[in-house]
Structure formats: structure tokens, C-alpha cells
Length: 105
Image 1 (cartoon, one colour):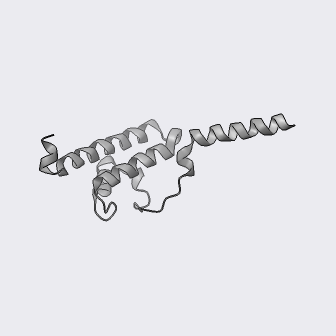
Image 2 (cartoon, one colour):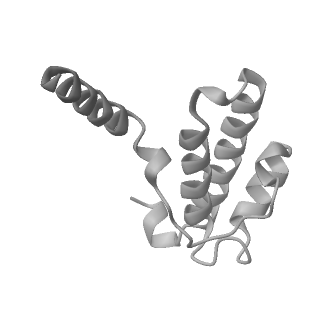
Image 3 (spheres, one colour):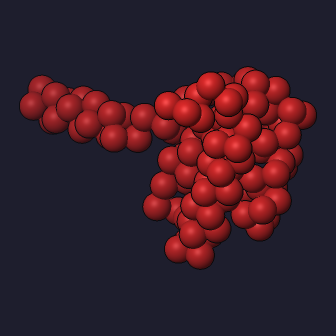
């Protein structure tokens, strides 16, 4: 009996390590409802805005990565491709907005 309890406990630990993102409970930003179901350009533009990401587009990139990680295998190939395209657009915007002294490096 003790063996079964120990195995169950070990399996729970393995599962929690694998699915770390499911346990995150943050309340720092609030993207509009349904944002991640829209086109890549709309997602990138919204996540780069000061209203959604007061700390800048890099904060929006973190939100997008978090959403992709949280969705995991539940994303369809088409939806994942659209989100990856949004990441590229947002990354381009981050590079364009970088201060001049950082661009030379």
C-alpha cells in the first residue's frame, strides 16, 4: 500500500515539473479577450501598444510566449503558425524601437 502512495506522489511531482506553466497565476497584464484568436498583425500591434503592454513591446512578447507555452499541444498547426508569425512581427517591432546605441552592438 505504501508503495502505491509513493508511486502516486512521484508521478504527481513528475507531472507538475513537466506542466509548470499550468501552475502560474499572475495578474499583471490584461490583453483583450480573444486577442490570440485574431490575425498575426492584429496580435502584434495590440501587444506592442502601451495600453496592453505598458513596459513596451518586449512585455507583449513575453505574454505571447506565455500563451503559446500555456496552450501547449492544444494549439492547432494553423493557429500555432499564426502565433509564430505574430512573434516575428513583434520581434521586428522590438528591433526597430531599440535605442540607437544598442543597434550598433
